Image 1 (cartoon, one colour):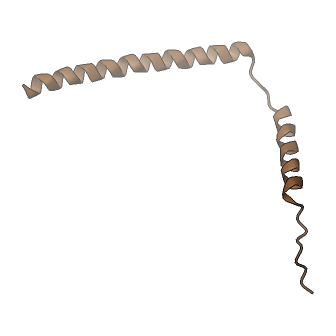
Image 2 (spheres, rainbow, N blue to C red; image 1 turned 90 degrees about the vertical axis):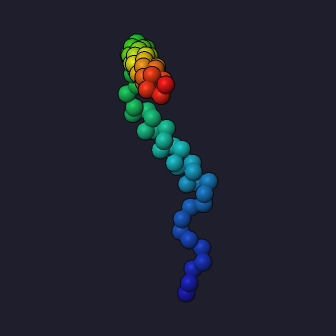
Length: 71
């Protein structure tokens, strides 16, 4: 009548299948070359430094302006 056991495989079988699927998908990935990674990392670091300089300058300038106004 009512079957209490499900037809789903146990957790370890499902986990093993998922890990196998993950590794097969990772083999299909096109990885960037080392040179491209270094170049893009350098671009990101330069942009972060530029924004740091701009925002620090704005913060300093607005702080000085606030000091002048509040005196």
